[in-house]
Length: 68
Image (cartoon, rainbow, N blue to C red; front, side, top):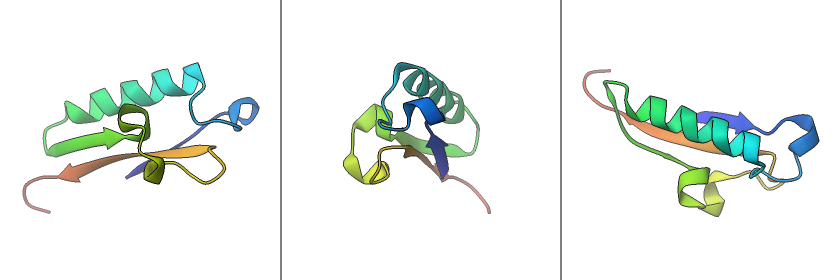
């Protein structure tokens, strides 16, 4: 699990363009890593459960495959 926090000037919304671009890049990079599967994020799904109540933070989640 990775929490992404919007910069101070953008904290009113987890969807400012710079934050969206960075978080989508993070999700794509993680999805390409061996040993990770099912990488999803608030920005890819829009699922309210993946963002904080104040909208300043949102999650990128992935499942670790293989031996732990």
